[in-house]
Length: 208
Image (cartoon, rainbow, N blue to C red; front, side, top):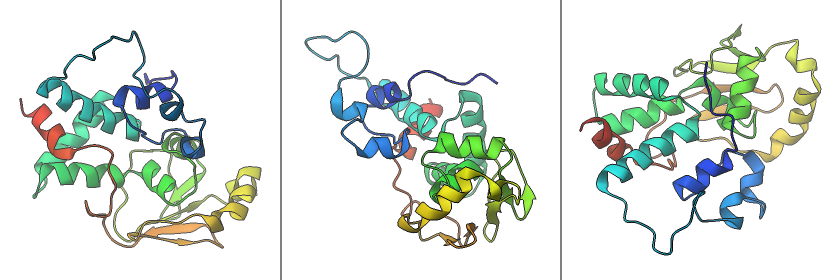
């Protein structure tokens, strides 16, 4: 499947804010947004005004970049958010947060969502004690996320076991830091999620 393989820091610069795509690097002075806050490409003396349509597109792209999704994938999950009862924008954010690769990232098993997606695709992660290599799998309330026995022997796992103590997880997740097994104790709410994009604006983009 096609996927963006360029410099992810360009995405943050294009969005005009940090999307935390490079893990710990985003919290250091090496972050590209800190070093070069201007968007990539040719610079103009006066930055052109962004239209409402442009703002809507930018918010949608920020959501896509944050969760590492292609347009077709993102459009499909937006359609699911529309079918659910409630506010579509909030439903969208909650569905994105329930993706398995995002849960792996939120539990601290990976420093970034792209790294979490790679762990899932390589078969290191289990969902309810079953190996799954589908990063887009939706995690339900009560589901457990752990590691395969074979993966627990890897050097990455051993290093993670030493550094996991310093990491914190959201209130809607729980983590056994000794066994490195996490669980979704409740469904995330919009208040629990510090989204870098506006779900309402994305709804307006697709409702044109």
